[in-house]
Image (cartoon, rainbow, N blue to C red; front, side, top):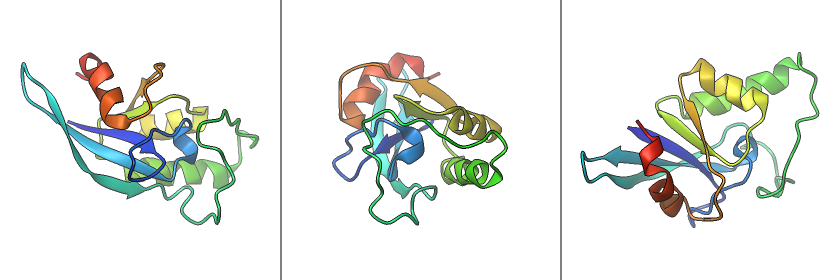
Length: 132
């Protein structure tokens, strides 16, 4: 099973907003009774890859101010989903409805994280029973 976590960089600090993260850390979950995670690698988020000095603070709340029929914005979310479509889950602190819809379209389930941990491996350990 593969699980994506939005992260700021190689430090694996989780980004607060999945739609505006620069990277996704891809983890493999393996094992039966004793499950473990291994980091497969980082993938760039194509939704933000072309923006210079990305202006969002990845830990702050961001509300999409796009119209519901803004096709360019919807396509941007679709490219993000395409980048992790081989994953089973995307762990999120927050995600807009366009992120949720795009992930649903490629079969990636959202797993909400409400805790205080900052590092992806520790977050996954907290959520381990949620992945089925």
